[in-house]
Image (cartoon, rainbow, N blue to C red; front, side):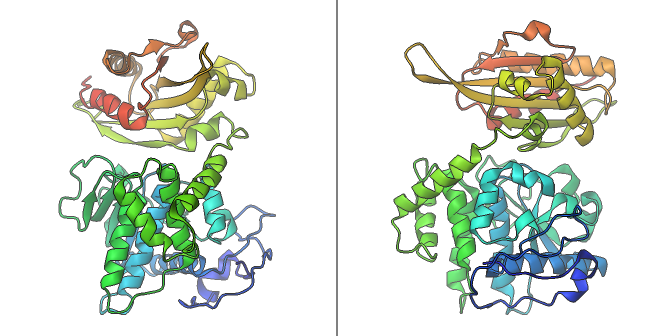
Length: 458
């Protein structure tokens, strides 16, 4: 469902009227509008008119109006992790929608907005997100969504002004939000002790964090004197997030399955069989997720980048910036994607990216499959480590930090990491290992490296 709106960026905050919470269904249209003045010349946008799209766009508009008026203190920011996957994005949008609508008729209505902690131009690096948002009739170009690069103020400053933050799909806030009060946490990872007074504060092992958010939403919705409207677009987005994180329910917990059933019965897919529908969604989104061959090395590095400052006992360097990429290609295949198809070019691209984000240490976690002599597929993983000397640490420190992290990786018996077959060609403070621990993605490797950095003292 799309319709044109002619609101240029210069007048949109004042001229676009409020969106009705009960807009009637209209025939689907695809009408191109004038490009927003903040966008590149020649770009145009299809504006969604489904209730969910309208709510999201209007919430973004009102947030920016209030910021301009010095009323940021009235707002809660619901934020996922900086990787910006479908689960993180959906959980944030769902809870922001619930907070607004469940309190709309109360004496204390809540102003809440979902923040995607990724730049706008990085959102399409996850094709599954683009497909799910398009299926939910959201505006093209993600103009309905508030992204990190659209914040009108630095997070460190803004966190002092807002009412607070709610974290979804992540156990702790990024350091730049550390000044904000943590009001609630929903996560399916390990509890790190952040926000002890947050409410609700939910840590539970499920396939999808969206399961936890949707359960809380439905429980609270069903206890209201009168239920608010849940748009089918949001319900279907929730099902999409649970489907892709649970492998179409094949890897689901009982709770994932139970909540998916509750959501399905409220959606436009209510007549479908749960297993069939979730399998279908997983197939569609999974195919989209794998469509990455057109991406270059820089985009592969940044599409699932997660990083933050790590405290150290070093009096010279009390914090170090550490970042991780997850890339579904072998290192050799990535080298082939570079302009010159050579080893040095990959590291030049990596250096340009980490210089941009100010990372001292970067770790690329690669995974791919090979066939053995019997024709059976084996999963291979690689760890690519790089340490810079020009951000917070000098050359002597960089060498020592590189040795410290390398030793931590090589001493981890569960990895049994082996030097890459071309390790002798690597430059200073560069290393690549291979290993075959199938579950050793970021959740396994990150704590090993963070622990080494937290103990580093030079």
